[in-house]
Image 1: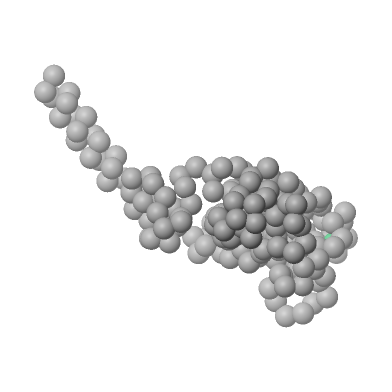
Image 2: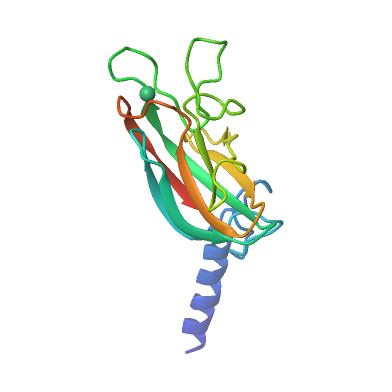
Length: 170
Ligand SMILES: [Ca+2]
């Protein structure tokens, strides 16, 4: 019996040692707990945002002032009729090239969102590559009021798009 207990203790130690400790900027701490507003171990929702729209009501509610962390992967073809490059959640970030945006303050084709029912005055964007070389982008949204988060693509012409983004909301 003592050997079994020792094996469990040793095994537990090995498992603990194998848990990624992180770099202090992403993910939970070594105990799996969120820290400093970092993403919780399991997202509240994983939402598919189609490049060809329409905008998605995520069903995720937030309180006024709440900071909601999100991560996103995927690419969108902004116009399947031409051979443009695919854009990630950060959209087109190069010099002006004629790409149009619904919200001029964010990059064309970027993953954007906002809050229902105050859509249009509370948008957010600014997803940035998290540097893990996995095509993962992150953003934090401070909810300006109580509401439900929506997500969409910053493109006024959606029907000619393809692809989409997968978004985890923490
Ligand atoms: Ca388009």
